[in-house]
Image (cartoon, rainbow, N blue to C red; front, side, top):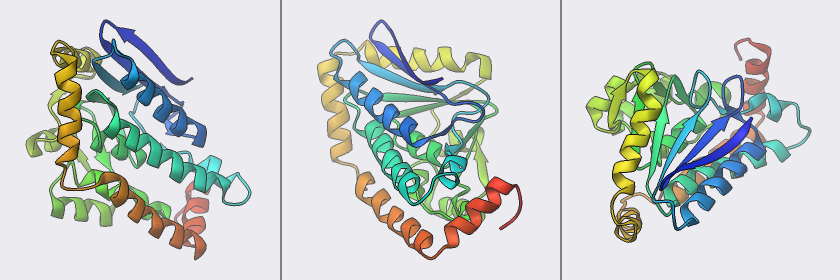
Length: 248
């Protein structure tokens, strides 16, 4: 359980494993960020596959951990951990291929939205339930996956979109049966890794450099409103309801 890294040739495979739904605790987000940055620093790694064990890719932050912790330590830790993990995907020195199965929610959107290539299983779906959890954030990253007005509708309604829809938008590269997901992601990563890594590393930096949105600053701006909702007591209302399995 935790963050695992293996290497097959010049492709590093980083895998999240936090049963039952890959809702990452504070330490999990920081561990993921450290692992991704380490992988990118390895000279013999030319591409990274980011995947997850279990029935879904990521359910976001561990709200139960947050509500069981006195004070704001877990809240601040989760916000900073997500910030670092999302940035680590985006800033990884080599391209990151996300392999997504089942649900990709909340913080999962932050990871996938910052990936270079997305491969998804046929049962994958994507969304931000943040407004139902008393939080805001990752609209920055959802906007990299769906068109602007679709993002707004999904954000306000906490609705989801399936992999086939994102494939039509062009943000999901390939949609495959679940049992082919890992192999397909590794295949795409291997195609990238076969190129001259000196060129690909420059290409990654260059593409980030011409990005019209500063994803770090944009996401940090969103986080400010989450802190505002927390100070107002709104967020606790919704998180307590979620933990108790009732409506806020």
